[in-house]
Image (cartoon, rainbow, N blue to C red; front, top):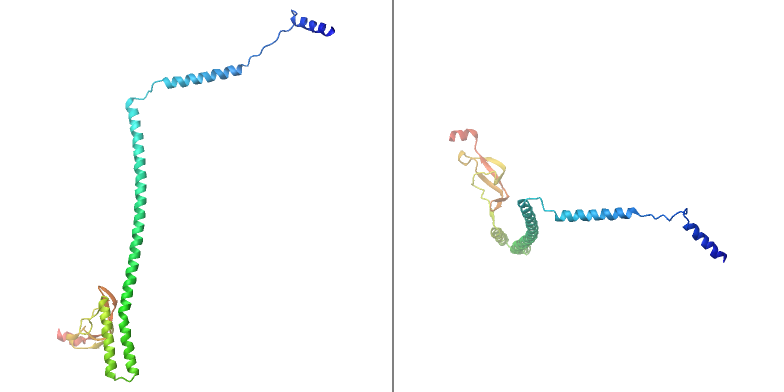
Length: 224
């Protein structure tokens, strides 16, 4: 009973004319956020609905520019692919040519050495004949045959001997070892060949080592 009485008194005090009324608080931050979101949406809609201010020819030019850029990029890509393909094919061709050149050089070297083997055989026969007491003439003939065989092998390889004795001295082909006094008409001619020179095509393998005739100055002037 007492508790009911206290509750009624408390209710009467709240309803009394002088009692304080309940204060309601409104969260205005949510209202502001909602207003801002609405304003942004309206601005976007307005911008989307707003007509383009660019002239038509400008839009067409921009579209053509984009299309040209795409074509250029496509051409550039194809060019890079083509260049890579050509580089790969060039490398493969170079390697194939190098292998072919190496094989040809080995084959030519083998053929040349094979052609020299008969020369070795002839030399061995000449030595055997000398050891067995063969005549000097037979040994000499064997050596001559060996030399002939060797010269034929060189000729087959394109090697040519340089003519020396009786030829005019040529510093490009001859190496003067010494000189000898000769008649004025033989001045500058090769008189003796100490070692033969050889060339292959236009390439000098080695010059001929020779003796050159020289006429005396007085005799040369008298002849002139």
